[in-house]
Length: 346
Image (cartoon, rainbow, N blue to C red; front, side, top):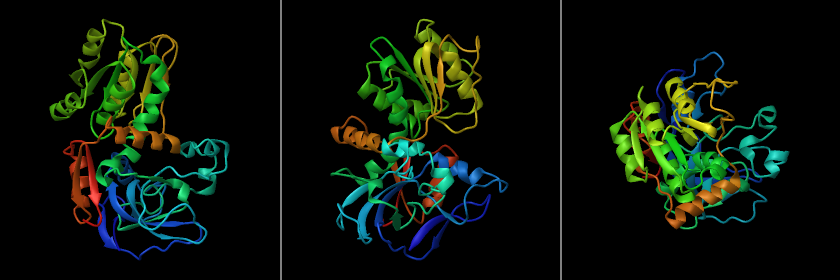
């Protein structure tokens, strides 16, 4: 089968031919209908050789949907042809966090060498994908594969981040979304669907700000040196009850801290390497700063239910598997508006 692999440190990914996988006992083989392109993949391909955490070659893709192609011995509850989405952050399934469905916070994943598809084990940028356990599959129930696949990360991650701050996003409150690309434009929709907060979007691109307005942002502000002052003015000097930074570089993290209100939440989702000092007098009183990771299995079901209701959708552009390297090139250059989706079978 064809697959998109990162094969050499510092080199672009390549489309290659690899052996077809076969499901063993308890496993499920998917025919991949759609796979999502993510900035996290670019981060992986930007790491130096020293300390690189994964074995190469690595088939990319941690967002995937597909149809069941074959079932390993002992698998029940699924049938060939079932359309499913992949829950990506796999865990051990037995620790305290996994028992809650929070496999994204599995307590034993590192110890046991458990890696998500595309982030340590073969991912969804291929014609077929091997799933370790049927619990990591969620029914699509009529959702379009292209529309659904970004929700497995670009939907699930902001949903998980926003749920924590829902008690603070009451009428009259403000939520700030920094970075309105793949995850951020979904976060805006989630905030509009789940809260009555005023949503202020920040981005360096006018094109991305137009997308932010189109999906529901009340205010759209250019993310520059004056952004924090602009948000303070919008909020009457009080700041925002919740700030979600989907970029995570030093300037955006600094802005996130500068626009937080007293008792506000600052959530750093982006993996740009920025950090926010926390200490008495450094931030408004009782500001909470956290850095979440992905989301739980039950939350993926909730996100897909929101999509079925029409409350959230993802702006997508599609590419063939042969053109997947171009999709990553465009994403790296900031020329993907929304989310890029690879169609391994056309």
